[in-house]
Structure formats: structure tokens, C-alpha cells
Image 1 (cartoon, rainbow, N blue to C red):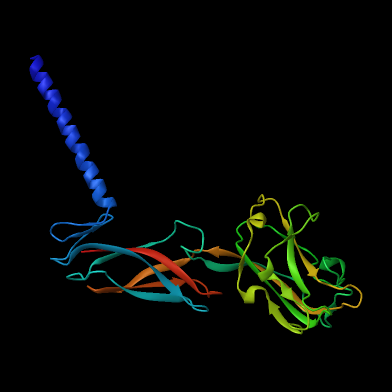
Image 2: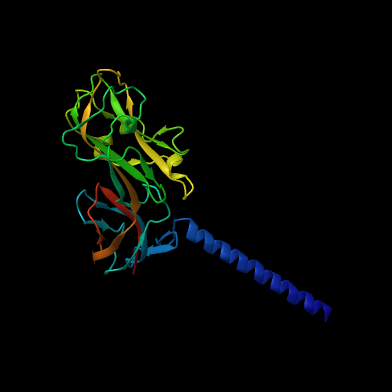
Length: 296
């Protein structure tokens, strides 16, 4: 009786060992792409049989959407052909909030003016290096903006200059404060600075050639109840005799919102076409990335 129990226990052990070995083999077949002895192509759970032109194939791609358009599409070829039209599964790439690998739509959340359309233009009398705008122009519409950064991601600003500053290379920049205005930090760096000397004034000039700039973490990481203060500062001003004038000074803050419809337009045994439809016109070119699986 005792020997029989030992034999039974031994068989259970062997059965468990074989089950574990089988599961490990299955896991490896899913994780590691391979080619079987019959020529089947296996990749991450997909198996394609070139003899019958059936099975599964998968990949990753991007649908481009050009500036000022509401939609885009792309036609892709399977790595290997199918014997007939396969079933296509599309999955948006959503595992990141950065650009790339996943592109978002840029949507304006806040648009404001430090200076509305001024007629006649407002003059900054005795523009001086390091001095903030609001203390020098009495008719400024918004001497300093108060911004809650929650949900924002990018920004840009523009100046309509009427008379140039007297110093070559003089420019304006946007700075922000997180301590109630005691100290200020440059919001965007050199690409956000706008010249106001006679090389660009008179005229309308934008930061970063009009493209949106990423907001720094120091601006975005404020407590939701905290409001950042935004001001305009002069760099290079000569003081007395340096009197630039302006018609308009605007700033725009935006959020990147992933709002779109990803759809299969048409499929064949060798190719398929994927489209994207969005709910609003874009400010710049973007790419909507996605994963695809084709099964037959």
C-alpha cells in the first residue's frame, strides 16, 4: 500500500514538471519571434503560414495629418500576402503622453493680450534692460497675466511692433513667477525671444516662427490652486531715448488633447488603408500612431 502511494505521488510530480515545461515553452514562443520547421513565421503571439497564406501578422505605423486639415490616411502592405481579405484590428498608441511616440492635437485653452489693438500705438518710454513692461505702459490691457497651469502643455506669443527700439539686438521675453512676483524665470529660452530692433520692427513677429513651445516643468508643476504670474521683460534696453512702440502683444497657451477617430477604410489580401478623422483644424502637422493586427 505504501509503495503504491509513492508511485502515485511520483506520477503527480512528473505531471506537474511537464506542465511547467509546456507553459515555459509556450511563453517563449510568444515572446521570441521564430521560424518553425514548416516555415511558419511566429512573432509575439502571431503565427503566419506561408504555405497557406493564412495566420496572423502585425506591425506599427503612423497616419500623417498635414497642417490645416481635418483628416489623413495611409495605405500599408502586409509583410506577406494573405489568401483572402483578413480581419484587421487597430489599436491607438496610448502608452505615452509625449510627442513622440503618440501625437496629440494642440487645442488653444487660453488666449490673452497684454496689449490690445492700440491706436495710436503704445510707447515704452525709456525701455531699460531687465525692466518689466507693466510698470512702464499705463494703457496696457493686461500688465501681468495670472495663469493656472493645470492641463496646459505648450505656448507661443506674438508682437506687432510699430517703432523699433534704438539698440541693435534688443528683444522682449516672457517670464513667469511662482512666488507672487518676487522672482521671475524665463518661460521659453532663446527660441521664445522676439527682437524689437530695426531688423524686425515695424512688423508682426512671433516666437519660434509661430510654432508652439513646450512649457517647462517648473511652470507646469505648480499646485493646482497656485497661479503662475506672467510678465513681459525687456533685454538690452538703453533707457533714456530708447522708446519702442507697439500695437499688439498677445500670448496663447494650449493643451494637447488626443481626440480623433481611427478607422479601417479598405482592406485587400495584400494591403489595407487606415484613416483618421479629427474634430477640429490642426495648427501644425501631427502623426497619429497605432498598432495593427491582421488575422485570417
